[in-house]
Amino acid sequence: MSTSETTIAKSSYRLSGHTVKRLYNFSIPLGTAIALLLIWQLGVRIFNVPIYIAPAPSDVADIFYREFPLLMRNFWPTFMESVAGFFIGNLTAVLIAIAFVHSRLVERAFFPIAVFINTIPILAIAPILVLIFGPGMTAKVVIAALICFFPTLVNMVRGLQSVSPQALELARILSASKSEVFWKIRLPSSLPFMFSALKIASTTCVIGAIVGEWIGANVGLGALIIESTFNFRAPLLYATVFISSGLSVLLFVSVTIAEKLIIRW
Image 1 (cartoon, one colour):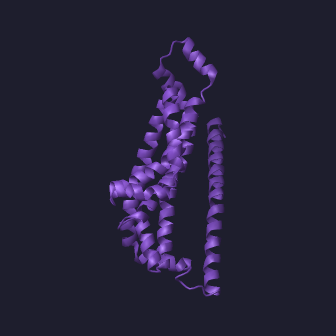
Image 2 (cartoon, rainbow, N blue to C red):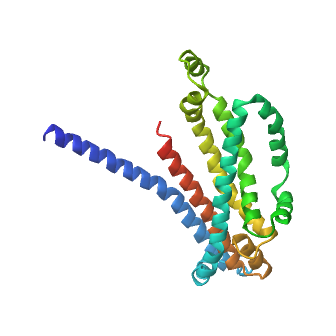
């Protein structure tokens, strides 16, 4: 066998081994989830649990199939509110973090205010925002943005300030401008911190949108949760909750993929 054929064979072996390992790692949580669903199904049937209290997974799957158009009509408003709140809240946090790092006076003046706003429970501030912006989409976007804002602000400030003193000293010796220091030193060092915050925000923005819909909305997953609860439609309630969770997972995976594409080191 030639050297090139040997190299190709080794590469194929490593690739197949890596694929098997990934499939094995994926099969563990998948198998656990399937086992839990089977236990849930058997438990409901064996103990004759009323469907309005805890429907079986088969009942949830059936209502998911029959009410899929209804679920999708309420999914898209929540999706748009969550994504808009995610981008607005995180972009605002990043810009303010940059201002804090470049001006200690601005940080001392406004950081305590940001902390105070974060201490207000989202369930308490949501009705105020609905009163200010009305029952439309704007209030839900603002609530989703607020719930994303503070974790990203704190992590971004820490990331921008975590630059090696030696790197800053070298930049000073080379007469680098503030913009060069920011783009070439501070920003790259802050990216791991930023993406850690974005992963948190990718799930909390959905919570914010749903909470806003609880306070005042006619459409959306939050409104559908309230309606199905009051009407004792437990299978529809569970299906809505699963779709909400799926939306959070979708956003989380999107952020994870973006992290792998951007942070290559």
